[in-house]
Image 1: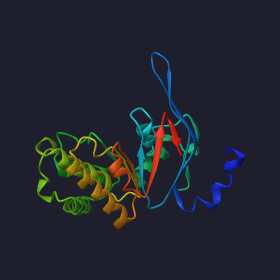
Image 2 (image 1 turned 30 degrees about the vertical axis):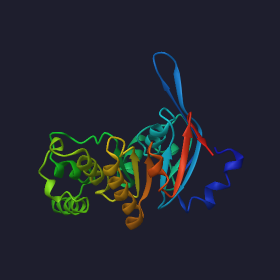
Image 3 (image 1 turned 60 degrees about the vertical axis):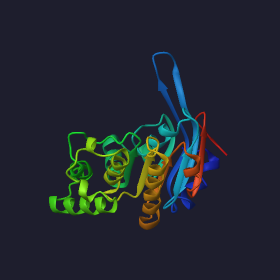
Length: 238
């Protein structure tokens, strides 16, 4: 149950907020001692917003992103994603919800090195059961948008870092998710390429009204978002 002071949020705000999390806690258990990473984190994000999450290394940014993106479980708290109560869902239901609504961009790309660009981007569509002709059309459309239509047969190691990141973005958005989670997608790129990647994300946000959560160390980029969430020592700093 929610604490009494939080009950007022659950009806009025759910219509506008695509993410609502209350008192989220997360601890990792190592061989030495428990490491508490998140402490009573509360967050509400409106649909269609571009939100940056910033903070020093070890502040819990990536952990929070992974929890909100349904890639990791939290220990305690309440989490609603687009009105779905995650606390009441089993693993199969959570996997289905993630597949339906979420795209994720990782800092290290995580492209399959033995798959060419087309197959890397096509993979989410295969998982969701799109027919081959539809997959081909959707992959070509998104790669045209990324400016990489001539790279479809290339392997990832034949691309530059910026090109690999654009392929990772294409893979994350090809199925047109409602929410895009980006975990330091510009962290391994030079400033010029990083700005290009950020501009692509901003365009997706404005043109497709895609809700975007963007973890970054780059305060210059963070300030260009609609709002900023600051994390320090696993707590949101107001």
